[in-house]
Length: 322
Image 1: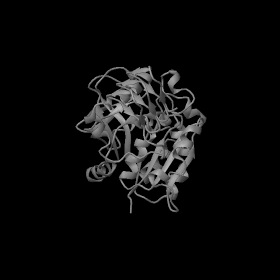
Image 2: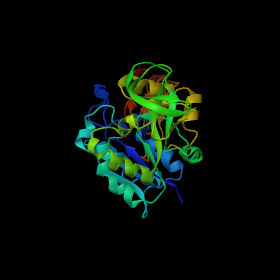
Image 3: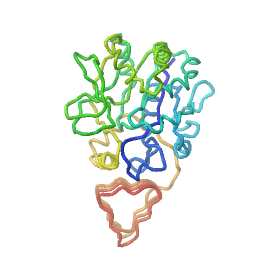
Image 4: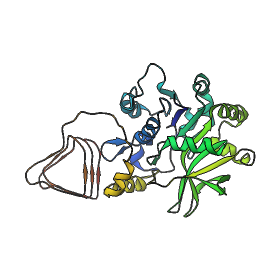
């Protein structure tokens, strides 16, 4: 029997004003031509045997609902448990940086009450990484921590959407918004005992405009919050530049192999394979199904059902579906 239930929060925005994020939540952004960003969070949980996952939705949820449906592609269309689509608050969609907004969690408190698994695994869809959630839960149990958060050292400066922890001997002392090179960033994965989460929701009810980890900032001395270091490939996606880089990184076969070392499931489209017509030239690119290429493609990611005409040249680009 699974020891945990999962919660994926999609009801947040970013500081970026890029047009590429307008009209849809970050969680439903296309990735590598065939995935959506939320696929990694859902796959990480179901790969760990979690069969009860809640998803807190934003107000512009149409594309997200269209993609996840009943959860069938992640084996979450079940009589007992499965995928639960849950409402988010309007406030949550407008506050940058609040990805585990207390108001969203309190509004969906019944989800935590009705389930009896011992732990809750929290996640967002902004971090591209293939996480062994089962190992994270095991590490949490072994350490006896109140909360275990997944972290990694920052490799760049200036990402104002990323949460940074001050960690001393593996224990979180405080948090802040924004990251600088070498600081310990939060990968938006956490394991917490279900009963403790309910207690925290009651304790912080008056400050429901805060993020859960922001509300805990004055309480890190009282609770044992431990950081678990993540060794694998990770990319935060909060703006157009990071979105482009995250796609281009996967043109490296080693990075692609690492990111897909555990299955990443997505919505089945049942398209025909990509067709390379006579005269087509394709190099160092990822091409999704249903695409027809007559021209030249180099160093690019091409989505489903794209037609590249003879004489056309696509280089260092991401082409969305259709």
